[in-house]
Length: 89
Image (cartoon, rainbow, N blue to C red; front, side):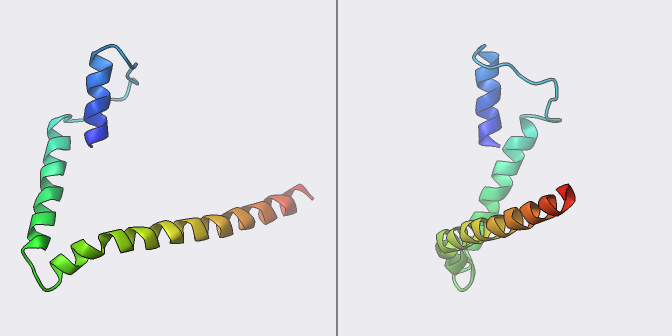
């Protein structure tokens, strides 16, 4: 969302070329999304029992998600390689 806003600014400045596809409702939809996500984080912070713990655990959750992604990526790559080798026989 924020990256797209920066991209549009740089495109208007002539530093980048924009693709023919345009995001509908931009930039209103992007700002609305950022406000919504910040409101969700604020509501989580206001719940001391579960919400704050979840916010504090976000880095741990992110590391687990990234580790899982690398783990499954390796397995998918091996499966794809074996399927491709079977198809070429």
